[in-house]
View (cartoon, rainbow, N blue to C red):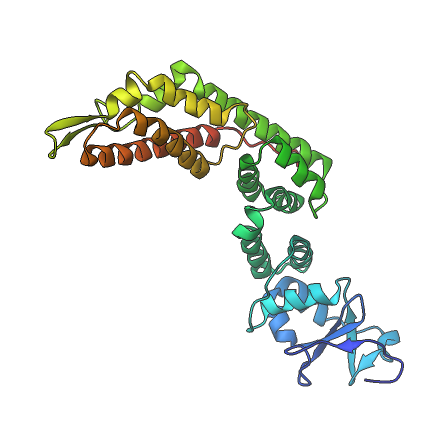
Length: 316
């Protein structure tokens, strides 16, 4: 390194002496890279950049005869971005802020593969399940409508208190319009669920679309009888099961993630069922338990279908 040039050289593979380009991060770290790889990653950006000769006043600011190309990104962001483009181990993201920073750089330099990689990382369970609001904030920032809807729907498992806490502790700054759009979507989903739980809709949409007719009569070879799931769901105890769903889904801002809903419905129904049908033979009981679980999953799918019909409207 020539005298007067400050900073450090990045780690492998960005310290290759055979590289023909040097990118310098905002905090002075030099990345020796191959122009051909950068051009493959973004032909529209780098081919034009490398065709322009460096300014004359940059001739003294060199490393081993190669002029620097200054970047606004810090060394951590550049390192992750370049690793996505290079034939090396892909970077691991532990913080949403890092994904956002690399996504911003990938968008700036028109690196399509890097953008796709960042998007895939964003929707990993470690981010989407634990902090869907921040994931929504990132994709909203980049005007990605379909991805924003997925993230917005993932927030539905948060009750009002958890939603506010996540908003307050989000590492990603949310635009005011993003907050308005997300709250509006959650409210609309809550209203859709409330309508689905109204008795007329419940009987028509939920019970009316159940696959059995009559509901769940299962012949039993052990006791030569029929399991009474029909009476449990559509007869004497239909009100009890409907009450389970209303309790879990009301008020409208209560958690409504379909898988969680199916599990909670099934557990609640089993508790009531086991006391109601404790005198049935073991074969009947197992058949009924399976039917309760299957029906709970059907209810969850029906609620999910109602949510999917909610229009997703964004301000951008």
